[in-house]
Image (tube, rainbow, N blue to C red):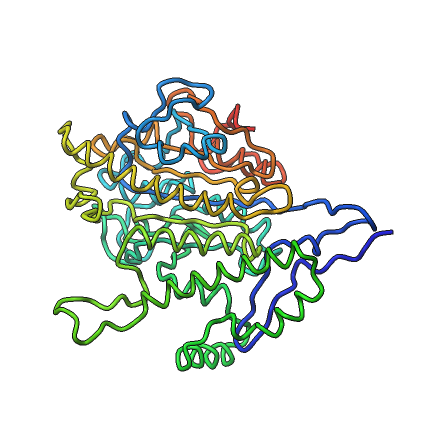
Length: 448
């Protein structure tokens, strides 16, 4: 006899609050006296870092099984069985192809589209639909949000940002259509509110005001619903729900610290946090935590995360690199500058390792969220000094729901289109067999 499972769309409700739940055993179909079979959804994400990488410290010495990792990838050692290094991939449409300078803008615009951006600083922007949006159109109707676009630099949406290219190109990685970018959200508080607010705008505003006035948590509004639900759950599900709600509260608490007004007696020149962490590492980590929650609760199955906009000249003084990232990337062979680029690259992979740790800790039956996601991490530029768009620094991370082979370094023929990877990923994601995507020429061997 089949036992009727709890709906996967069960939520905890309260004033201006609608909290989706992680996948619980009670949501899975099962026969009487039989264990439930875990049916976790596949997720897809794309993480972008700007200005390329110091490739000598990125590329493993040998192909095949990942054994000794190069310096930049060392922070990822605990997950060596869950990612692959793909070398030889190229983003041809980031090249000039007759359009002159503007490599940074083209790199971000072409990274997920495989299309040449129209060179314009006006409103007539055009590039192409991005791979995340192809996936979102396929699975988006099954979740509250078809996709989630986040980042740590807002950028501009208009004006000239790179040699005659619109700022829209260097600020946006996700494109809903050839002329419509999906602007990313960089404020953790706004992402949090979006994920957990209810459907009634008036009620949302009332709840937000009440939380601010009485310093309440979103969890305070759903306590009654949570108690009712726990009375219907087994011990394992109660523990999982408690862990999930504690994670929500932890993020909420951290966001509160960023949003507190500065003490008027504090030293002059101190700027208020305004909801965004001053510490760049904390900014990346909390946005990563929000992404993990969104995947756990099946609020979305597709996301993009831009660590910094292409061409970013952010200082990394907090790790002892006060110079701007973009300026350093034009190192001219200077060993000291190359070492600083390596430090920046290691900082990024260290933050990536933190996000992967949270994904691996999120249990989904006998698997984890990391087992059920496929992530591309990389840049549309190879070496920042050369501004080349071949031999890109690309990682393919996660188990893809049991579809991906991991723990390997694969070297593809020179100039293999990056979009060949995306075509393969869309296959594994379950899309009907596509003939092509962007400038693809086929599918990648060895990843599945």
